[in-house]
Image 1 (cartoon, rainbow, N blue to C red):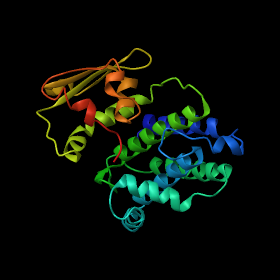
Image 2: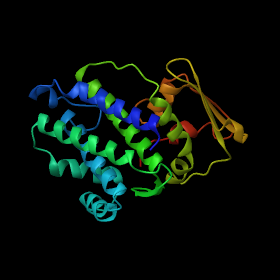
Image 3: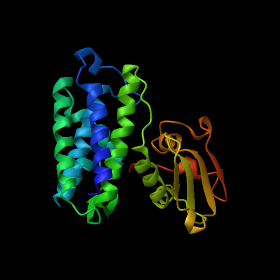
Image 4: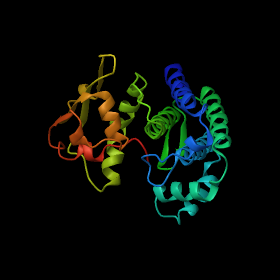
Length: 251
């Protein structure tokens, strides 16, 4: 795996653990922005999906994915995730936290020994190990924000978000296809990172639609944690009415 992506995944895990490690029992039960999930549920979900990623890297995802989807009645990934948490909840918050912390460490170790170009199975089909690691970073970042929200903590955006913005750009064709829509042509991102640097994606491909603005806000929109009209993002081009509505970083 590329060293920068692995380092940023470790940094995201560390940020979440810094929130979780000092929590008492009552704090683990605080509600989060995830519907009907408390802090412990959110962390349990991360543990479960990190375990799926580990199975993917071992080439053993198929049976675990089938069991995961059956939990939700073989309907949607969201239903399967909700059912998997409901079926496994009940452990103490600190125990759930340690479970996740250990699975996250195993995941980083597994990624460290994988060719980033290797193709692996995931919920939505086959993708590169690099893309899988970016999706794990994105999901951990989203849920770190959910935990911080529950605890009343405000987290500053970091340069780690560049990987997530790139993931959102690269997976736009999937996001459109998932909604039964079709892109009119290439999309480019011209974003500004938290430190003021440019994050440009796809601008050399002669995009017909261009998204401009804050990289952090784009990641929040793609993570379904902020509405597009609550940001300063601007879009020009034929897909301007749909690109921010459909962009996403998870299955």
